[in-house]
Amino acid sequence: METFSYKAVDASGKDVKGAVEAESRDEAARKIKEQGFTPVSIGKQGALDKDVNVSFLGKKKIPARDMSVFCRQFASILKAGVSVINALEMLSEQTENKKLQEAIKRTQDSVEKGETLSDSMKQNEEFPSILVDMVKAGEASGSLENSLTRMAIQFEKDAKLKGVVKKAMMYPIVLLCVMIGVIIVMLTFVIPSFMTMFEDLDSELPVTTKAILAMSNSLKHYWFIYIIVIAGIVVGLQLYKRTDAGRHNLDKLKLKIPVFGLLQTKSACASFARTMSTLLQAGMPMIDALEISASTMKNVLFYDGLEKVKNGVSLGLPLSNQLKSTGLFPPMVVHMVGIGEETGNVEEMLTNSAVYYEEEVEVQTQTLTSLMEPIIIVLMALVVVMLILAIYQPMIQLYNTLGNS
Image (cartoon, rainbow, N blue to C red; front, side, top):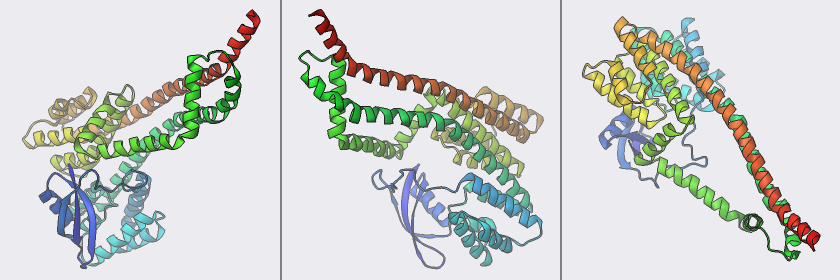
């Protein structure tokens, strides 16, 4: 997909600028119009033209946990018989997240002007497309409260899944940072203190000591070059990741990394199964559910795979066969969906698959953590031992020389 920057005019005549991802200029124009804007100019962005913020992470999204609370409270207020406009007003007053609060206020203003809730929410990029589509389905079926409750559960599961991974990875990351800190302190403060003594030695220094001294000297006097190189690598990777080929290559590499790749696959399966079951239970057609599920995939290979699955299913082919043909989904998912198709209960089988893979992600994450901890500790010990040996090796050689003379 390409990224198109645009200039547009909103309903009040105010100028709006932004960017949208689409396959073509026509699709970009359609997406801009869906947001309630009238496009004035649309241009394709190059890698160097794209917005790069300080964190290089793109626009900050509203946390899934905040979205879950919003949906849960919205459903509860509507069940109490409060109108949509009054419910939005109440939610905007008690929501702590400022971005979400502003989005709710804009939605309320739009609904007061006669727009439907789903169309009003679509104009705010803070609301995920899956939530907008679920609200639209709820409005059509007269079960908006149920749709919001399902989305609350969906966001809760997403938040829990991400939380498990982040929590498990925190300790290894801290260990890695400590290891890097120890190396920097040793090279910039400890090693230089021995330099004068090494210079006074008449004997030839060992190769390892020379290498460590050279590294220490370069880090102490040319530290800014290291920072420039690291920053250049980070920026280069981010720019490369924003290209179509770069994103495909990097996401393909992620799936091939031992242990990490398996974790990525299981996370994608859990997300796909949970999203599909939620959408199908709300009465959404299979094709629409597949399109939305594809848009939630973090890995572009799974996005492409689900797009192909959608095309196959639209031709009347079984969902299970199409999932198998991608080569991305494990046999467990394919078999569960196949059983659901035979029994006419695909939603329940997808829910069971989601529960299974969410548990698998938790187990896999714990396994990954238990593997990384000793590896990092051993690596840290080896680095420290190597630095100490580089310091004391010349001394040992000198003592041996003096002892033999």
